[in-house]
Amino acid sequence: MPTRSALLALALALLAPAARADTFTVSPAGVDADDRDGKTAATAWRSLAYACDRVPAGEHTIQLESGTFPAARTAKPKNGVTIAGRGSTGDKATRVVASTDWKLGDVTANPKPTDEFLIGVAKGKGVAVRDLAMESDPKHRVSGAVHAVNCDALTLKNLGLREFRWAALFLEHSQKVTVDGCVIENGSTDKDKHHSGAIRTRWLKSSEIARCRVVNTVGTEYGYKGGGHEGVRIHHCYFEQQGEFSFESAHENEFGLEIDHNHMNRCISVPKSGQGADPNTRGFAYSVWIHDNLLTDSYTVEGPRNHLRFGRNYVRIEKTGGRVYSQHGGENRGPVWIHHNVVENLDRAFVWKNRGSAENVSVLNNTVYAADAKDRAAAFIDAFHDAKQPVKGWVVKNNVFVAAKEQPRNLVSPRAAAEVAFAANLCVNLKGVPDGNFVGDDPGFRLKGDRPWPFYVPAAADSFVVGRGVDVGFPFKGKGPALGAYEFGEERPLTGIPEKK
Image (cartoon, rainbow, N blue to C red; front, side, top):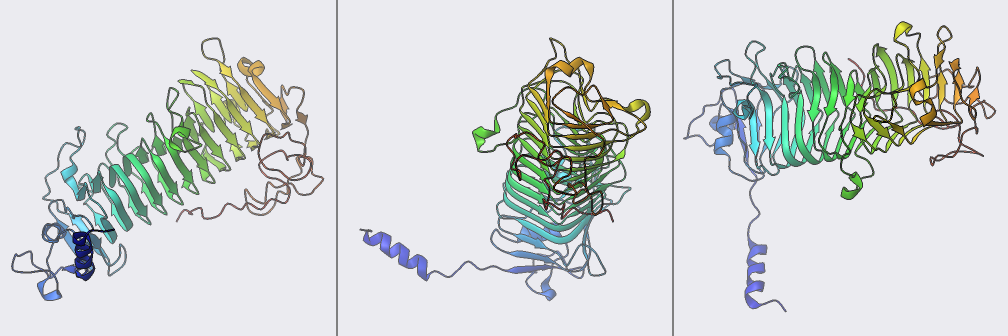
C-alpha cells in the first residue's frame, strides 16, 4: 500500500497547473532590451541570440517573423525550446544572416571554432529549429549554421542553409536527431583536407537525415562526411557535388547505417581497412546497407567494409573513369553482398580489388551493361590475387553481364580466375566464361518503359533468363530464380528519388 505521504504527493501533483508553454517574438522592428518580455509584437526582441539568452528552458517557441536578422554571435537555445521562422524562401521568408563583423577563427584548427555557428546546442534535449534560412556572405563565410553536441531529440526541419565555410550542419555525439526537408547550398566551401562536409557528423545514434537537397558548386570534397553511426538512416535526399564524394563515412565502426532512395552524383565511400566490429552484436544485420538509390558516378561505392550490403540500386553511369565497387587495400574478411543492382554504361570493372585481402564477397543477380570504354575497359570481375593479397570465398551467380558489341570483355581477370566461383551467369559478348554459365545473345528483357523497372524485367515467362538461376537465398517465382535483377512479373518501381532541379 502507498504511504500517506506518497498519496499526498500524488494528489498535489495532479492539482498542480501544467507547465506553461509561451511564444516569444523576434521581429525586425524589435529591440534587444531588458525592459521587453518578447511576448507581444510591441515588446518583441530584435535578435535570435538575445532571445535565446532570455527564454528559459521548457516547451517554448521563439517565433522569428518575416525579414532579415543580422547575427553577430551564436544563439544558444535551452532545452525544449523551438526556434521557428515563417519559411526559408519567398517574400515572407525568415533569414538569419551572419554579420560581416563576425570575427573569423582558424577553420583548419582542431578543435573547430564551434562558436562560429549561427546556432549552437550543447547537451540540449528536445530543441527544434524549423522554417527559416540561415546564411553568411560569400565574402565573409562563418563556419556553419548549426553545431550540436551531446544532444538528445534535436529536430532541424525545413531550413535553407547557404554559404558556409566548414559545415552547414555539424552534429556530433548525439541521438534521436532528425534533419528533414533542408536545402543546403555551398555548405562547406573550405576544403580543409578531408575533414569537412556540407553535413558533418560524428557518432550519431538513432537518427535520420531525410528529404534534403545538398548542392555544392565550390570548395568541399563532401556532401556528407561522417563516422561511427548506429541506427542511422539517410534517405530520399539529393546530393550534387563538384568534388569527389557525395557521401563518406570511413574508418570508424558502423552499426546499421542505411542509405536509401537518394540521388547521388558522386561516390559513396565507406571503407574500413581492417575487419570492423560485427554489427550483429548491436542488433543489426549490416554495417552499411546501400539500397534503392540512383547513382550516376562510375566510381560508385568505395570499400572494403565487412557486412556491407549494396543492393537494388540503379547505377546510371554519367561520368567515366571508375569502377562500380572498389577496394584499394585493407585486410577484410567480409561478408560483402552486391546484389540485384542494375548498371548501365559500365566504364571499367563492376567489382575491383587491386590491393589487400578480400574474402566472402557475393555478387548475385545483378544486371550489368558495359559501354565501349576504349582503353579504360577491364574485366567485369577484376581482382588482383596472390598469396599475400588473396581473394577467398568469392561467389558470382545469377548475373546478366553484357559487354558492348564493339568491345568484347573478359568476365574475370586472370589473376583471380581460379579463386572465384562462377555459376549460372548469362554472359553476352564476354570472353573466358567458365563451364556452368550461359553464353548467349538475348536475355529477353522487356527493354521499354521506365528504367530500371520495368525496362530490365523479363519480357515473357519464356524469356531466356527466367528460372535459370541457382538458389542463393533470395525469394523467387517458379521453379528457380531468374538471372539478373528482376523476376518475371516483379513490380519494383524505383520511387521517391529526388530529381535534379
